[in-house]
Length: 171
Image (cartoon, rainbow, N blue to C red):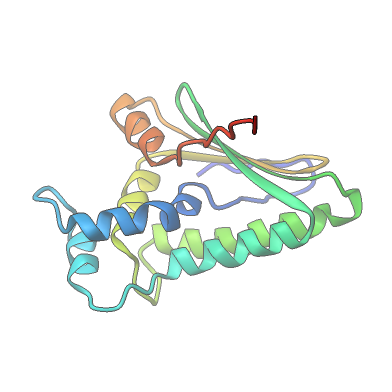
């Protein structure tokens, strides 16, 4: 994994931020024939607790509390995740939240997580293991990129991105 930053190394949660959105859909669908062992175990579990989902929620709450926001943008070779705040004095809080989240992500990718994952996070872990992850510190927050030359993986990454909702103007 390559990580770069002008003022040190900082990585944010990427695809794992999507897991709370996709997990209920995967749980309802049940185990798929070509599911990973992790996904099959997650589907068989009675409790739906997930280390990655919990860490994502805490991270996003901290970023929002710091006046920040998160945006996931599909790009040609994967995903770009932006964590930004317009409040200059709150940028370190956004970056720290992302760094702590990434520590959990690194443990999950390395297979050293001590708690369970949901089916969506198991699927995301498989994608992340096969992708290149890069992170850049910016003056307003963090930019993370998950990229690969395997367009099958790119397609799967793009499918995990929540669809944007267009707000219709009131008549």
